[in-house]
Image (cartoon, rainbow, N blue to C red):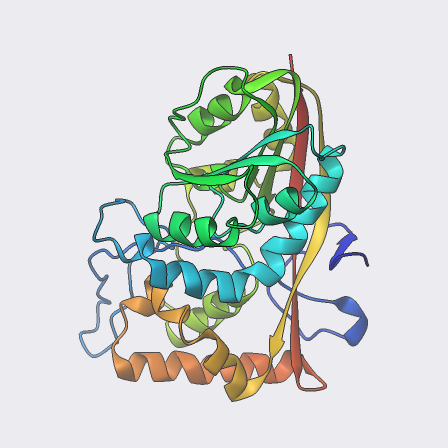
Length: 325
């Protein structure tokens, strides 16, 4: 294992008891949508939130646009998106002072900051004002780097502007994910390298996997939260490669890595995740009693996978790399 990542084949099935050597799960796609609640046939059965993790409308009052969400996401996610980003930068290779790099759907800078530390000139873009504010704070010490509010599906950037363009579990979440891929390629110079990281299967990993399993236990008769179309499409290695070629990249290769998320067990886990859990769409819609039931289910799940007071969660991730024609 290097930088928290190991080459592996993806595991099948649900979370299971894990030995110390099995290094388990990850943190997944951040944002979640607030919609109408689905009611069961029995009015005495608790209501379950809509089957989706992802927000549909990015208005200024959307909680996923906020600085509070950006900090909650960073605190929980950077320990996994960081190593994935390092793996992507290493795969692209030759990132240094002569590199003009674009980070699409940059979040709080899991990729932008290490790219800046390697000397690259980085433009980090995200459509969430809270993320951009946090990005700007983290890039303050790098005068050749900046963060901008921008839609990755319609980049306000001239053609052939960058040597490298990357998106870490970003493009796959776009409503128009094919357009996002084309935009990533469009802004690359001829010979420039494009890299996309995607989750291998829904809902991604880490606390999202634990939450998904807890929801199944508490609400067994309700469907699992739905993954975005792009998430599902690009979670297949062959499909990811084909879509990257269709977008205009050549010499495309796709590898699979295993990424890990680690945190405390038991009540300490709930304490550490208390800022992020309310932003998970299904959990957000629950009553306080329902949340307590889900929290108890989470503790029961963690009890089975705890080792020396810690929880280590693993999840497969795809990295696709190609070169602009």
